[in-house]
Image (cartoon, rainbow, N blue to C red; front, side, top):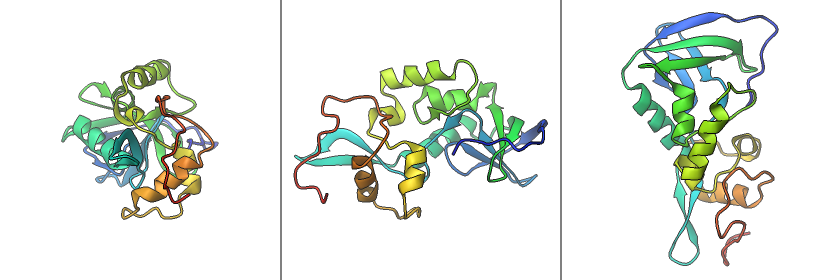
Length: 194
């Protein structure tokens, strides 16, 4: 979901250790504040993507893109202190900001390894990091992945027990293509349930 700034101007710095909610959302437990990384979007925790290489003859390999995005963000942050410059408040009341840990912009790092995509508006240079990851087929760009906004609109079951077949069905009906093309793009194996 794209951040929507509330009319008030937000200018604030938040510093401290964080817990990670997902691949784009940080939780500062000491101040009880949630910050979303500005300019990017990442898979939700229960969201699946699919490796284009097949198991056997007809089954695509499910990839837990939400947990992998969160795990990569955890790897970048580690136990270091995070500094966030808040620039807005989104429609859910979370802060939206530019965050860094150990001198690295966390959003750029997520884009560079392919576990996030650019969200409008984004800072200059973000799109080039996304293109780099797409060309190199890093992270989610090595899979068929449903656009995050489309997933949020179509996913009925959002629990962590969500089965990959639910996302496979959503992917087959997608309206927007964000995955880079593969040789067999849009070909569906025979014998699917749809």
